[in-house]
Length: 433
Ligand SMILES: NC(=O)c1ccc[n+]([C@@H]2O[C@H](COP(=O)([O-])OP(=O)(O)OC[C@H]3O[C@@H](n4cnc5c(N)ncnc54)[C@H](O)[C@@H]3O)[C@@H](O)[C@H]2O)c1
Image 1 (cartoon, rainbow, N blue to C red):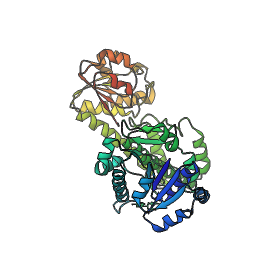
Image 2 (tube, protein in one colour; image 1 turned 180 degrees about the vertical axis):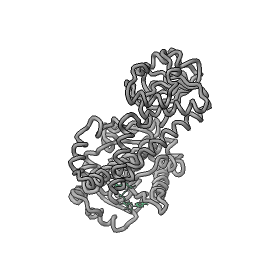
Image 3 (cartoon, helix red, strand yellow; image 1 turned 90 degrees about the vertical axis):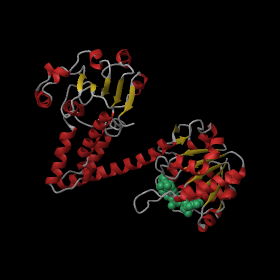
Image 4 (spheres, protein in one colour; image 1 turned 60 degrees about the horizontal axis):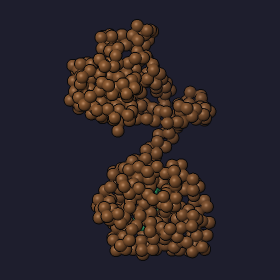
């Protein structure tokens, strides 16, 4: 395949070297004359291990050249990859001006070429950007199928970029529905195991990864600061924390849904941040977790209020399935708030046996909801009722059983992401999706 690469900076240069190594013919395009000249001599414009060798051998084998003329590059290739910069403006807003300029030029060149072409955007762009660019510059080409546009986020790290390109940590391709990549393109560029999603999903994956990396580094550094102050070696702590791939380094706590609660997380966060304050250590990230959790609860309450309902059934009152622990459960807060607002409320939670509650758990619920017994329904049919909201916090009844009682008069809010609920007749709303 012949491939043009726009932007011979970090990402573009590595992409060029690696694709040429795979046997593709590569035409680099850049507005900087010096980079074009270096490429044409097989010299890397950036410092990156293994790249000099890749570009030199690509040049020797006649698989690499560069130009500053967009039209010439489009004419000579079937696929273009855009890797130009997307810097921050002073305000922090994303500057798409380089991508806009390149996409405009590519669109005009493809129109003149009058042959099918594929455009792959690799520059990091906020969700909605690919659609905006298509609407502004490429609408006619995409609607006729002359141009297929994919967003393919890049996850390489400088200094190990060639190895990362050859063995990517993740391959996600954003495509327009009905214009998914061909098997040939998957094999040549994206990788056969790449996940195909929508443009904005792929764009969001890139930002989520980078925000997650920043959050992890900040977290480890905050543990380091408090550890140092109280005489604990945070290197040992983080090594041990990282050994837990069941709860710590896993997808387990990475599912958008209900606010965290229970007898441990809020209490232990309060204790740790208090310990830091007492020791004069500032931990802005850890300090922000409980306020963020509270904000999340408020957003659930807003969603509930906006439904216009005044009657609700809560499925699952405790903070997670198969426990009767009601301490600091977000659903207890929701129930209290709805009762305060005059809602008619019913609660279904088969794991909850009020007579069996003891100790701190009993004290907590006796103080917060002394009238809980009058709200609990022992069977699903009565709990769901004929109409109103069903707030589903837990899978405490199978979907097949819910199907018997849920009708189009119900309004479901799915708090934790249970896709099968969309098969029910009720109006469906997801909490965070
Ligand atoms: N650097 C990384 O490690 C990395 C990793 C993943 C993703 N990204 C993303 O990839 C994109 C590129 O990053 P980079 O670090 O390679 O950028 P860079 O600034 O090193 O290179 C961008 C290149 O684009 C060229 N360019 C600008 N306008 C052009 C035009 N109209 N036509 C042709 N070339 C043009 C510039 O001259 C420059 O050589 C950014 O969106 C970045 O966020 C970067």
